Image 1 (spheres, rainbow, N blue to C red):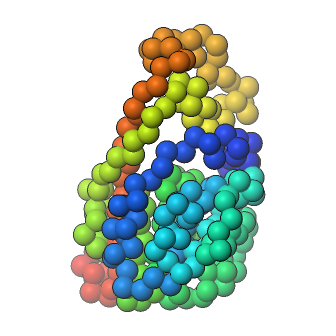
Image 2: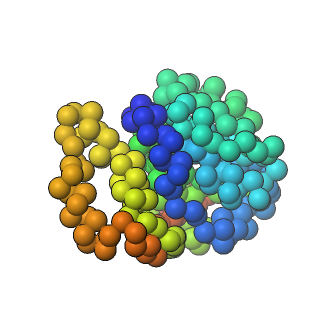
Length: 230
């Protein structure tokens, strides 16, 4: 999967909508300590640079794609780290500062690429106890809710941006589905499809306000009591 994001890393960096600052302020308010944040699947570091560095002393931003990380914006608080899929759990924990070291773990759209059975134990070990919080969007959530969404009831938020048709087209070209098909010799965006999309948009020169809906759940490591209840 990493090679798919390597192939279109530059386009990806230019087409991601911005996350609302108030959402990261809300997440930061959930953690009593603001020493270390881990942005897993950081991509080009958008959430790390634009958001987490405003709230935490140190941000560890990891990704399996070296190509994506090459487009990340340097920041004195952020350490960008390439973490190949083959990296052992203990090696990743060491890069994060060890067990019980991380105050907030965030994962954005990359969560659908994760091997969650392997990822969850790392999060459990890395989070500070008590006080550590993990936030991401997914249907399964083996953590105790902290009041921002819950399993099956994700909290919703919107991201708005003014966009041209060309920007939207470039965004579509970053989608993993489009790139997986492309590797298999299938073009999901042939000229005739692009033409239809352009007509529906209203022409290449038209700028529209686009609203992206997104979702998040925030939680903390489960206690023995909640594990028994589950």
